[in-house]
Each structure stands twice: as C-alpha cells, then as structure tokens.
Image 1 (cartoon, rainbow, N blue to C red):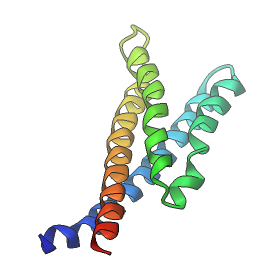
Image 2 (tube, rainbow, N blue to C red):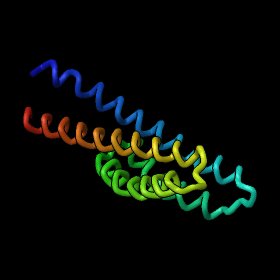
Image 3 (cartoon, one colour):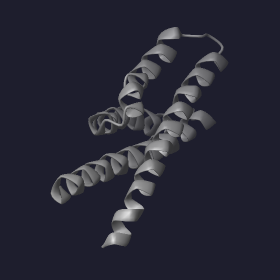
Length: 126
C-alpha cells in the first residue's frame, strides 16, 4: 500500500506535465496550420487557441477542475479533428490534431483523477 502512495505523486506530476506539453503543442499546431493556409483566417486561429488557453492558468496552479473542464472542451476539438481526418481532403495536421487531442484528453483525465485521489488520501490520513 505504501508503495502505491509513493508512486502516485510521480504519476500525477508526469500526467500534469504531459498535459501542459500536449496543450502547448496543440496550440502551436493551430497557429502553424492557420498561418500556412493560402488565406489566413484569424478567427480560425484565435478561437481554438483561446478555447484552450483559458485552462492554462488553472493547470499551472494545479486545479483539478481545470483538468476536468479541459476534458469536456477537448472533446469538441477531437470531433473536429476526426471529422477533418475522415474527409477526402484530409491533411497531415488533421491527423496530428486527432492524436494530440486523444493524448491530451487521457493525460488530463488521469491528472484530475490522481490529483483528487491524492487529496482524498491526504484528508483520510489526517
């Protein structure tokens, strides 16, 4: 039992770090993809980026709710990525977007779960 408790903070920190890295990568993908288009539509760059950036302060402060809500919002990005990937005009960035959203969803979900479990074990032990 003690061994499981000792591993939990390492898993939690890894999930948080992975979530932050993948979130940054997804934002960077949106910016690069938008700028590489023939016609730059700023709304197609700003809206997806802002919908993800609003969670960054909460993630940096380790708020579990930020990870929870990010999981809900990332499902919209996943749906867009899958829809674009399945179209006849799919490009490389559609597949990368789908992969990044899957990794971000799983890492955020596990970070939230492990953070809540750690908080519960602290209150149960006190």
